[in-house]
Length: 120
Length: 111
Image 1: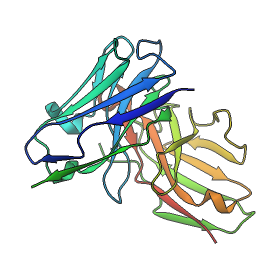
Image 2: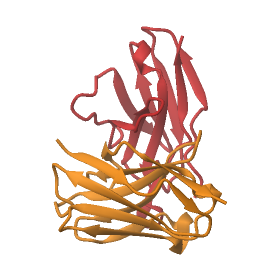
Image 3: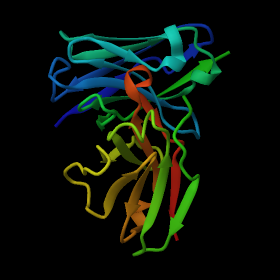
Image 4: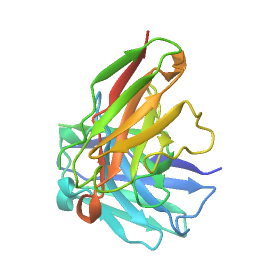
């Protein structure tokens, strides 16, 4: 079955850049018609979509995060990655990667999540 | 764009039915038939319950059903069970500029 696994540093200093990677098994990030996305959940709060990348490499971003966010895919490693620059305490959250089956906000497979904390 | 509006909490007794509402706008819930619902137990990743307003992925019991009227989508859980106690989130496609928007979440308590 399809499995996703997030990896990355658990702690980053304020103003630095967060980089996370999602390793995919059981499916290919090049497979039509899937999107591969990043979402997050601050402590005690709800879910927020961050970005997605289509099978052909086309990205889409949450406009509220502006130019701080970037998503990319490494098809040779069957991974996709998130970069979030100039982090602040508000970026502290559990970060999830997930598969969107059709680009219409249908996230059917999720990683277990990785905790990310911004230190001052 | 603001998050979709959900009640903070709902409750019900085992065997009863409860409905969780999710109110948006004509730009998201009302404008597209792409509303999904997720169940999240404490410390766990969310799980897809409903997609495209009314469809259930394989493995999701038919006790869970979705509907939509205007700018409000709803998730109904019938025959409540103890294991249904969790947080529930609605999500909607919101067009080519905003893409994806979530509700604030609803905590379901099974009394």
